[in-house]
Image 1: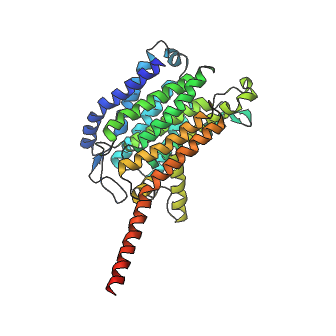
Image 2: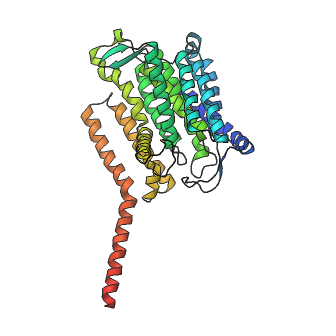
Image 3: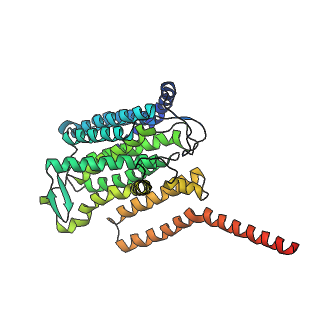
Length: 378
């Protein structure tokens, strides 16, 4: 545990130190987000924050490779190096988009190529825990990896609309998934340690970047950051989910075995939900699924009266409730977890709708006042 905490701090400090330099470089390179109709920010703001996160990721991974506890992961497997190479590639693709605004089909093609590369170099699905565990062929593995990676990368990209929102949600998901993988690694094969390593470093990257990205943000993560975060959390979930040995699983472990399939979806539930709603909404209007609009979840939060920090904190709360509520079902009785989740969900629902309720009351009061004045004049 101590080494993981140290790695989290190393990643956090590295990103915090690198980000100001990346901001200056982004301004010189023209990677500055201009204010568009759908944007919330009021002034042009530099992008490319993902480069700082990438550098922090490399520093933390190199540090991990030099520790006695984790060095065997780098010595006995090519997975960490494949993940690092893919991280560099996905971040570079994002940098190109931050500077030149690439066509979405070109970005999607790049994401698919990178997912195929990491699949061929160790990030694979060996088995799938659906009903009875079934083995996954090379073709199935590559397909699953590619689909999951592209969906997760774009889900994080879709939700990256308010200062600190995407990094906070991914950090919460990383903590939840990292907690599960750490607990599992104590009784499971060592593959879970790779997952824990990636999750812990990912959380450190997000926290370090939040120091520069909290409202009002001095730097945006851009596509270089959102795609990197989606890529890393997907790699961690695939390593955890796709390496379950069908011959070692007992029926009594059904829920812990099946949870790796559910948890990656649950920890990114809000980004997935936002992406699905956006795609359905745009296709219904005859638009491209990537056509921008101001109907994302965070836009709706602002429209009903929340401030940017308030909307971010409440959406973080929903992400934490779903993520940690899912994990807690593995350690506590379901009825206790369900009761706690119901209470917290009610509280979050009230906080979510409170500005809307207040606004409705004010409108009703104004209408009553105007009606009284009109009757008085009569």
